[in-house]
Amino acid sequence: MSFLKKLFGGGGGSAPSTPAETHNGYTIYAEPVKDGGTWRIGARIEKEIDGDVKSHFMMRADTLQSFEDAAKASVDKARMLVDQQGDTIFR
Image (cartoon, rainbow, N blue to C red; front, side, top):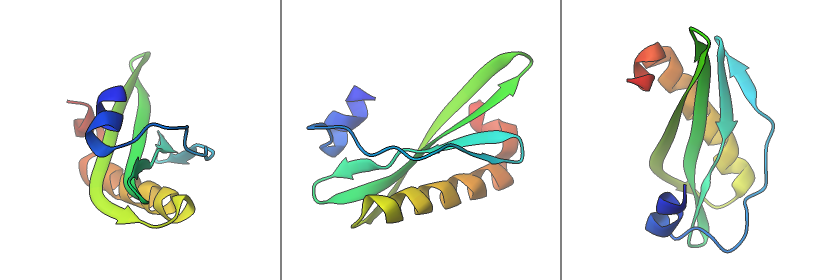
C-alpha cells in the first residue's frame, strides 16, 4: 500500500476505518485513499476460494470531499465490480 500512498499523495496519518460489508459471499473493506484535500474511491475485496483467501484492491479516479462519502461510494463501486466480474477479479 505504501506505493499507492506515494503515488496518490497519501500518508501523514491513517484514514478512519469502516466496518467490512459482505456481498454475495465477498467481503468488502472501504479503503478510500487520501488525495490532497479529497478522498479517492478505493476498496479491498476478499473471498475465500478453496481454503485460500483471495484479495483484490480496487481504485477509481473518482474523488469526493469527505471520507464518509468516499467510503460509501467505494463499497457501492466494489459491489458493482463483484456483480459484473465475480471471481475473475482475482486473476
